[in-house]
Amino acid sequence: MIGSLLAGDRLLGGQKHQHSLSSAPVVSRLQHKMDGSGLALCLLAAVFCLFWTPSAGLKTLHLGSCVITTNLQEMRNGFSEIRDHVQAEDEIIDVRILRKMVSLQDTEPAGQCCLLRHVLRLYLDKVFKNYQTPDHHILRKLSSLANSFLTIKKDLRLCLKPREAVVKALGELDILLRWMEETE
View 1 (cartoon, one colour):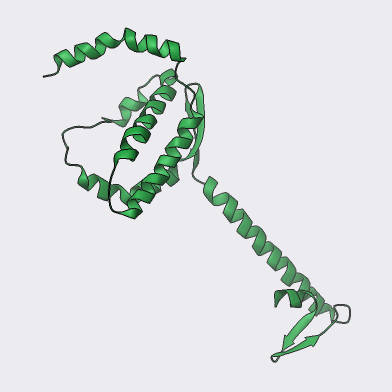
View 2 (tube, helix red, strand yellow; view 1 turned 90 degrees about the vertical axis):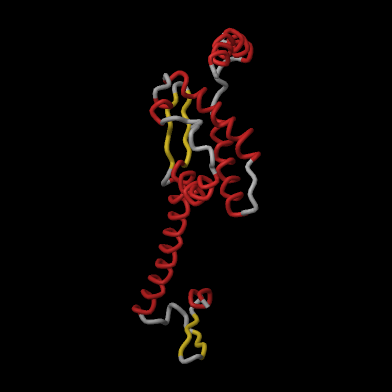
């Protein structure tokens, strides 16, 4: 119907009448132009909303030498939908993997990129892959979070060169052994 209106057809009383735009009164021609511009304005607004909405939650993180842009709000919203269910399953209440946000923020800027990369790798390799539930909604939300983490991780550079990383880990092995000896 819109196409026929733009071509000059008008519906009156259920009957179709043919009018040429040149013989239509000035008001009618103006109405046709407004209908067309209104449609164009609606399409423009719809396209604007489609492109604006996803970027509304984008945040740029400056982590030492790494700069990443991600939609933290989308990840927060996705996790908020399943948080209560997942946290209700946690029976180990006397242990925390991530003690405080302050300890994460206390990391030197040069090490923040590396720390985030390792934390994301932990979640991707151990947490998301091994969590089991029959609830498909939770699995979809976790899959979305995992994909977001994977995208961020790909944007992070390697913390150290492979050879330097191996030497560093071996050089600090005494710290791990001392901690294990002191643990009761």
